[in-house]
Length: 319
Image 1 (cartoon, rainbow, N blue to C red):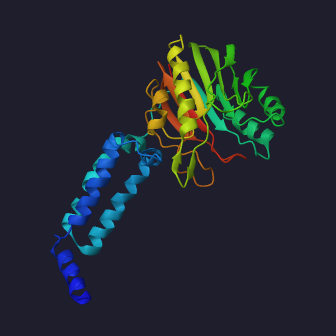
Image 2: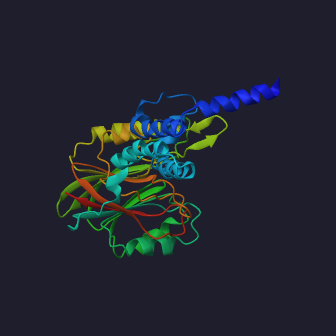
Image 3: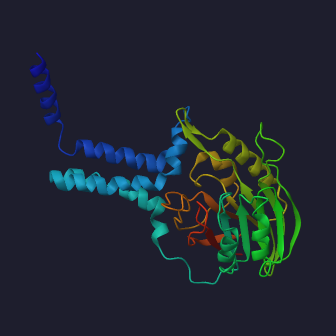
């Protein structure tokens, strides 16, 4: 009886046209790439986890091609075309060279880590970039003097609120906290600031933010506090009276994650470049963001590692 069932299963598998499984997989991967925003918001937020690592779905293309070669199936090779086309449509522009024009402003964003063993060395490395603006997160009271001392010679203007700070070559005005604290956290949780940078090309509102971390556990993708903080940040950006806005921060996810929609829907995403910033030892996602409004990020790149578990991110901005 059992042997007849096994023969029946093998016969059913042989009856499946060659390449049909690969075709189905290709269609699924291509659909996820293009229509990921249509996925339902299930408990545990599997859709958010998928969106955080969306570019990596492209690995399905070489896997499908390898299967096609092993099976010598043209149909299986064709199955790779749909996810390949979807991936190129979404991310192909990231592989093209950026514009050669000099930027009007260079901004550096870096979560320096509250366990950084060399704050002064990190600050010197960031100052050596020559950026106009440097935004830092996870500034501890003990490390702040080292950052301030190392950055002061080249960045005479700065503002800090809680564990975030902004250093600038250009004058800063109207610096103030931005309340992005989720419910249930203490009053000492301060991770948002806003200042007006008076650049040679005009004024711009500069926001520095560090959204709560995500937690991946038995119940799935824990992002409730991060999402609540994103809503508060989005409201602050919506109420900003200046046209030109630059947001620098560790948003603890990628711009494709729907949990950041209250922020990303009000800002312009960088035009190109993966610039994966986390974790520093083997970067798989860019969770350190430079987003703008009424100005354009024309290039994003990561900088050499510091003593942090994040890589610094530099962005070229055109007014």
